[in-house]
Length: 253
Image 1 (cartoon, rainbow, N blue to C red):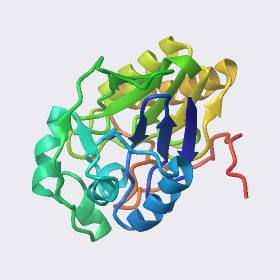
Image 2 (tube, one colour):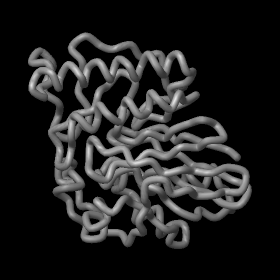
Image 3 (tube, rainbow, N blue to C red):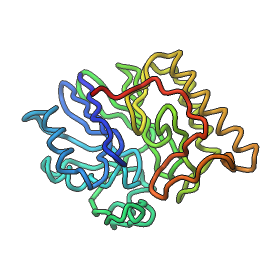
Image 4 (cartoon, helix red, strand yellow):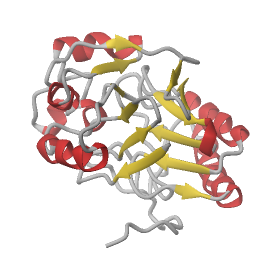
């Protein structure tokens, strides 16, 4: 088994290639802006091997915009999305995917469903789908038990960035509750939406508890983020703390 994180580019999310002894999976596809480059990067990992399927963590454009092109580039690899996001992807809905906020179209793509608890066997490892609503009604994360690693998707934007909840289908209480769920998993590593993997159980607990305390304080303030924080750009999925939160993880040059 080999897990490779392809670092996020600009608005794109991290995409993750999982090579197993009997198959290969891609988690997330990024926007359509860099889809040709993403295909080159994936080929750099897989070589001549087949990509069997693409598992999406959300219908939102930073995660799913490149799904059609990448699928077509790998012999129409099956694209999986939670039922709540299926219609948006199959019709190319650029409102609920937020593609319009990036002044982009949303390429329509045929999809298959992924359900909470579904397991994808790759021979020497397994990938388990875990529903993680919060930033959208179709939110998913993917757990690789062999490495005790979670590819989190939008529920954890980056160690130093809480996600926003003023998007279609977003729910602050669900975000808080799912952060609690992730804490209870006692993970060894997390791949967030952007930035390097967060590693080490103690460090992960510190990061997640910082997020949890923030969301709880916002719930107690009638669901409002701190008034002193800058208003997020219309295309970002996160809030920016006025006083920066710690960030130990750095992208290598």
